Each structure stands twice: as structure tokens, then as C-alpha cells.
Image (cartoon, rainbow, N blue to C red):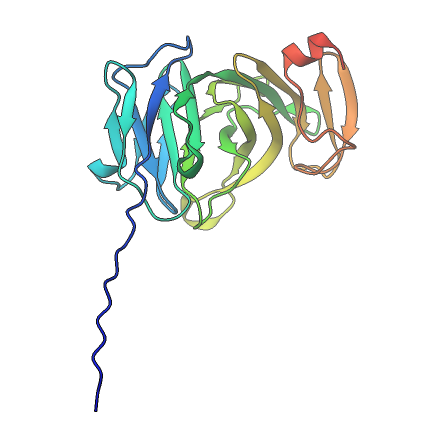
Length: 239
């Protein structure tokens, strides 16, 4: 004889990410678009402080109400919350989302590119996160700029966090380019990071900061115990 067994299976609904968005002044931020991006989903932060998400539906975004409240549908995998205005930016893991998340003011980063002792003008440099694109995480690209005739560049709208500056190498075929890392750094709210002068493509570079010049190893590698240039504010407080 045969026995027919019936099973009732109930799938637990994922917790919908919800909370209150605060502005840089600590007050509820009304009318700000909040995004929830999952693995492999991408967006872009412009120099105007606007996030554009690529090929995501309305379920991936919502606009905060008068009390700064937002609520989004849950996603599978390691999803993150992103929000930005012209004044600040915030990102947070959806699974560990606190009740309140607050926009942090942008900082700035500046530096100079030289080659054989001469400035590199009109070089394209880009801002990026320390963590590269991965299939396991969402990714937000960021804006860039051109060096001036003296090889100098400066970018605002720099989110707080561990970031890097890259230059574009257009030596590839078909008009494409690859991004060559210049330097990793840590950005703090409302602070300016000075990366100093970096030689183009050399294996040993010199970092000039506030009048100091010190040899550092190849681009992107560790120098002693100092992986990240300190902000101008931190240097003012002492080394």
C-alpha cells in the first residue's frame, strides 16, 4: 500500500527595510529618494549629489515622507540602503538597519599627477569605493574630473568612507579604458584629504603633503602602519 503525506510549508516573509532618514542637521529629511539595491544591482552618484539606479523597478526606491520615514520591499542577498542629497550621503546594510540613518556631509579630495617631473594635464581621474564591483554586493559608481594644466585635481561631493582615486588608461583597443589606482584614502565628513603629488606609473612614488615629501611603495600598497592619508583636519590636530 502507499501512503500519501501532506506537508504545510509556510515561507517566512523577509523583513521590509524601514526607518527614518535624518538630514545632516539631525532633523527628518522629507522628499529624499531612498534606494534599496541588491547583489549586482548598480547605481551612480553624480557630483551634484544625485543617485541614479540602473535597471531597477519602483520597488527598489521610495521617497521619504514629512517625518523622514521610508519603507521598501525586502530583497534576497546582501542588500544595502543608499540615499543622497546635495548636502550629504548615507549607505547602510539592510539586514542591520537601525531605526534612524543620517546623511553625512560630503568631504573633498585633491591631488596632483606628474610624469617625469612634469604635470599631467587633462588626465581623467575618478572617485571610487575601496571595494571593487562584486556579484555578491550592490555597487554605486561615482563621478570624476580632469586635471588642470598644472596636473592638479580637486573633487567635492566625496562620501564618508574608505575610497580610492583612479586614473583612466586609454591604451586599450576600441576606445575603451581601464582604471589605474592612484591612491586609497579615508574620507571623513566635511574634511579635505590631500593626496599630494603622484608620479604617473612609477613603481616608487613620492607623496607630497603639506610641504612634506616621503617615499611610498607602489600604488595601492601599504606604507608602514598608514594605509590611508589623514584628512587636513586630522593633520592639524597632530600626527
